[in-house]
Image (cartoon, rainbow, N blue to C red; front, side, top):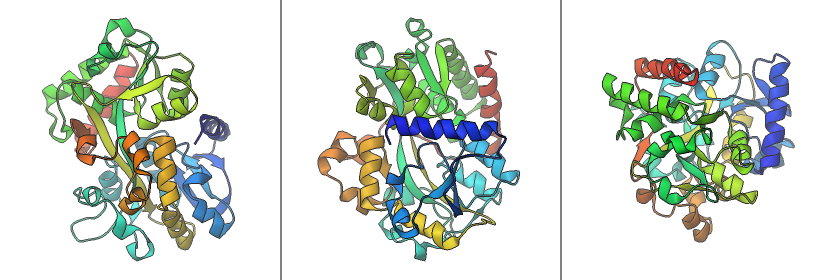
Length: 360
C-alpha cells in the first residue's frame, strides 16, 4: 500500500483511540467480521476476493505490537481474527485465547510453504490441531539513506551505536525486534536459550543504540516518513520500509550483508475463542488473502514473502529475485528467527526495554 494510504489509516486509528475506543477502529465496514491487525493491512488489495463476495471489506482494528494486542484480548476485547507473529502464537494459544482452525475450509492450506509449516508448534500442535495460518514472512534488517550513509560504514549492526550517527537512528518500539537486534549484535542467532549474561550484554548494546535514537518508530508509516523526509538516516526496520520509501522516490535501501546478519519472522492469522462474528466470513477472508494476486502485491509493494508456495510460484521470477526470495536458504542465512522465548525471559525483555527507552 502506498504511504499516503498508510498515513490515512494511522490518522483514523489515532482519532478513534482519542475517542476512547477499546481498540482503534480504522474503517468500520462489514460488522460481521472484525480483524485485529497491524496498521496498513486493511488495504483492499490484500483481500479483493472478500470484497467481491461480500460487497465490502471487514472492519479492521489496529494494535501497535503483539504484547499490546495480547493484553487487550485477554482483558475482554472481542475480535474474530488477529494477526500475530511467530514469537507470540504459542503464548496466545497457551493463554486460551484461540480456537482451532478448520483447515478443510482453507483452500490454500495444502499449498503452504513446507519449511514454514515444519516449524515446531507454529501452525499446528503435535496432535495435528491447526491454530495459526502462516501468511507473511520477512526480515527486520539494517535500512539506510544511500545518499547520506556510506555502505562501507554500516558493515556491522554495531554501526547503530556509532557516535557518528547520533540523532540519526531509529529502531522500532517493539521489544521483539529490539532484542533480536541486541542478540545479533552480541553474536547470538538463537535467543531461546539466552543466558542472564547474554541478556545483560544485549541490553547494554541497546542502551548504546538509545544514545543515537531520534525516534522509536511505532509503525511503518512513521519510519517511512522519517527516512523519506530525512529525519533519520539509519534504522532497524522491516523490509517494507525500504520498499515503500523507494516507491515514493526516496533513496532508502536495506542491506543483508552486515557481519552479524538479520532477523526473520513469520506472521499470520488466528481465530479468537468466542469470536462474535461470522465463521463463514472469517474463512472467506482467510481464502481471499491467499490468492496469487495478493501474494504478488505483498511481495512487490511490501517486500514480504507469502506463505502460500503455490501463489509465490505464480509471481514473475524477476520480481521474486529482486526482493531476495529466489533462494530461501540464502534469505535465512545468518538470521535470528523470532521463535517463542520462555515467558520469564520475555517479561524481562519487556521490562528492560521500557527502562532503556526511558534512558535508564
